[in-house]
Image (cartoon, rainbow, N blue to C red; front, top):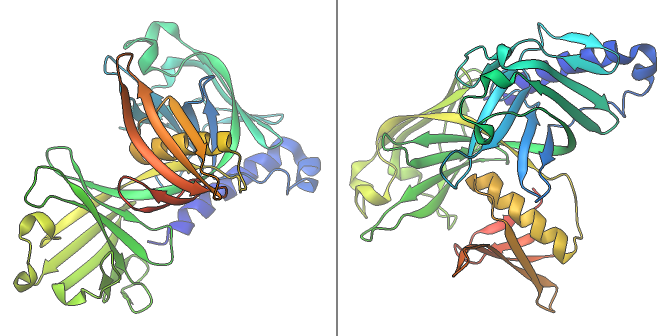
Length: 353
């Protein structure tokens, strides 16, 4: 769980490339050449399309994430590994020769050129596609184009999926403690989300990559540590393994409402976050809300209305106009800094982080 090691190694490699690009002059401008965690390109309609991930969380190379849409109206995410070891370095440009998909297959022949230009705060992605390799059509491929990408922050979440494809648990490691999210279902057919805080201040570490959790709190802050005889997290090849041994006598609510005894493998997923800090206008809050919802769900909602409530807060409605009706997906109430609540779930949110 020493995530900083991977990011540091990747940034050192990239900054070395930056130094080679500009020589002494670039070294003198080191502060201006500092890389952000991520760089984002949005389409004209505001939807995020491509983003470059420099966190090193998935692999120790830059990763290009792309949002595609096949015959289904919803979007899905694919990602591609850009191999630094075989790249050529020119004046302020990196030309990548080896590109791999997320399954490790070499797809370099898809591209005649695949270059990244470092230009001030921006990164420019220049792609020339081999059109003969366009199986799947334009909706499922990285296309020929020049893409101006703006700096962003990035986060990472570790997810466990059931055999039926449902996301059951996910871990947020971006705070002082580890937050475990769980999807439960009580007597009704609908699922609801619960959160658990895994405290690190009294946890026991076994080396750098295994931690024994001693204190667990529920979403109300109540100590529920006695529910568990064992809760151990271990980092395994970039993923996180959670080993749970449950005290079965504390199973009020049944199996649908509890974290059960078992071994769960959580795979990492990185996501981008805006760098901006408020205060924001109503229009800016609407855009942030669209990106916030997209980052956590993978769905981009084309319509956002932000209404000034006159008390220092704004209510944001995210929806899609279906012609004969409006399909609402989210309601948020936030202040001009982006802090507030999800009006549907009651969860606290921060649109800019």
